Amino acid sequence: MDANQTSTTSTWNIDPAHTNVEFSAKHMMITSVKGRFGTVSGTIVIDEANPERSSATAEIDVASIDTRVEQRDAHLRSADFLDVENHPNITFRSTRVEGAAASPGDTFRVVGELTIRGTTREVVLDATYEGRGKDPWGGERVSFSATTKIDRRDFGLTYNQVLETGGFLVSNDLRLSLEVQAVKA
Image (cartoon, rainbow, N blue to C red; front, side, top):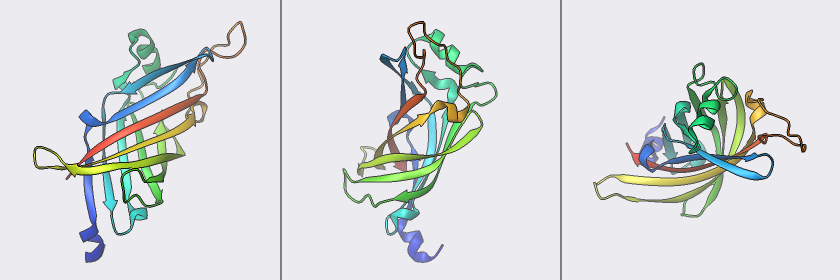
């Protein structure tokens, strides 16, 4: 890395207390059920001179899943779904950033590798730069939001039940929504 890149590159640590990783799926094909993961960590490297060289990594503790129903959470942690015993983390590693994000509200895309239950697939996050500022403790923070949709079967999440009325108990499409705040390292 040359001196010019070093002066325009900054590293930010995801603040788990101000970051939300949420998901939703259709239950019985008629109602969206939402949940979240309570424990997330990761790093964002921002290259302000060349935003396409920016990158992000994240790790989610699967055991921290919370849908507000403990019985459902236990089932989602089981081998039927996320298999937390053998796959305790979900990970994301960006491979490229498309589009600049200089002003709050600017949109861009983050392409990367999402690994769930030991299976890695490329996903595209539709992201928005939310802003940057000083916190009351002298630190600097940056915020982004992002959404994507995945087919859970692509990650080996195939458990389901056929309903008497037709359709399935759980939709194959999962919607993911992220609100990420990070602190400058």
